Amino acid sequence: MAVIKKFRIKSFKEQETLLQLDKVSMFYDNRRILNDISFKVNRSEVLGLLGPNGVGKSTIFKIIMNIEQLKSGKIFLKGIDCTNLPIHERSSRFHLSYCPQYGGYFYDLTVLENLTAVAEIHINEKNLRISKIDKIIGQFGFDSILNVKAKNVSGGERRKLAIGMAIINDPEILLLDEPYAALDILSIKMIQEIIINLQSMEKMSIIVCDHNARDLLTCVDRAIVMSNGKIIASGSPQDIINDTQARSVYFGDEFKIN
Image (cartoon, rainbow, N blue to C red; front, top):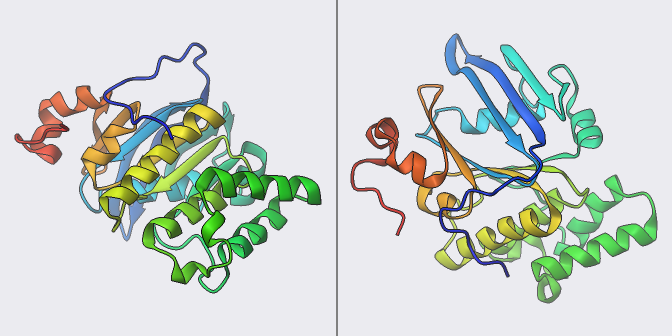
């Protein structure tokens, strides 16, 4: 498995923007959740989203996927304005995938049945489908639990299964919504290693949001801190930890990564 990164911003030899949010705003019942949010994600970059509860991190994911429609602003995928494109077209045409915080798998199906079910949706050719399933089984270490129902495996294995299902269509951009939630230390380490391997081996761009700041900052190239619907800090993990406003609003004075 990969070695977890320690405060290293990835050097991009070819700056290729896969995803861009341009002045995105969102309201719920006349309450502004997002206020002119703008950022870019490059190819093979791991970006972290941090901020207090209710700041709009999960809402950003839903807007990127078009699960929810933004109030104003634009979404660009590979430089193309996708603001009005439906979810299925964003997924298939631009290889975008979303792994939600809860679920993402079928409880009463086995691990193998879960992988097969989603593979049959995305991959028409049988041999290619079998090859892809076999690759994920080996990559994620599912061999010993293939015939166990998802509801009967550990929380960490269920989280791995949800990620495995989310990447069965070889996405270029993967959205991970709170992948560390309710996991033990070893399971968190396992998910971190998966994130790094997807970046390094599959050249995947990944956006991760989570409340566990230390574990998130360990495996990202760049991070964004949000407060009151706005971005208040952006940069490498060390940059945002040292940012005065980010420490005041989110981290606190005693926060350390080591």
